[in-house]
Image (cartoon, rainbow, N blue to C red):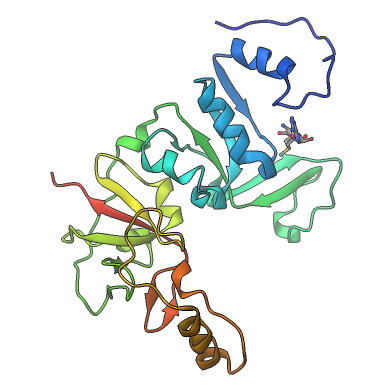
Length: 242
Ligand SMILES: C[S@@+](CC[C@H](N)C(=O)[O-])C[C@H]1O[C@@H](n2cnc3c(N)ncnc32)[C@H](O)[C@@H]1O
């Protein structure tokens, strides 16, 4: 049902957490908006708390937030369509746009790494990624600290491997829960009980010295490690048996 409000000013400051805004939220069937990125966690938690259907814009990095990732993992939210190359152009009167001239659009600001987050069912969630590569231990090394293989690109996920695999976070854009199960993520709190090896503070300091020739610390526990080096942020997934 579409509730039509005659235009009127809010009494308060319009903070989405205020009672006045929560009363308006309760009336909504679907929330479609571009919330403040800095309050994204709180915003999503509130939408879930009030059991709302939503389509909202968020930063790609929000995938790994410890409040957001479990919702993706449990298939309570997923990524929607849109934003080719994860680049958005927004109407803008406030900010200077630093986009390269070929990408500059008059009156708009270019924002990279943006995605739609939603809990409304869509077709791509039910579409398998077409896999064509074969597993080999040379091409897909195993992490030193996770019982999982490293897959650099979503398109390279091997079609004949049923163990745990580390894939880039952009995998989430292609994820179908019918094809894959999300097991966890490489992160330093071991929230998903997947770490097979922990590095001591001394090991982290020694590795930093080996790599950079000066004093510092290299947090090996924060990521999957191959040949003593951390790989980019990875989500750990597994194929569902068909
Ligand atoms: C990413 S901008 C999007 C603006 C507009 N929805 C659009 O799409 O052009 C986020 C907006 O949220 C507003 N905002 C920031 N903190 C807020 C809060 N606590 N409650 C409600 N809105 C807030 C900001 O002022 C800003 O206008």
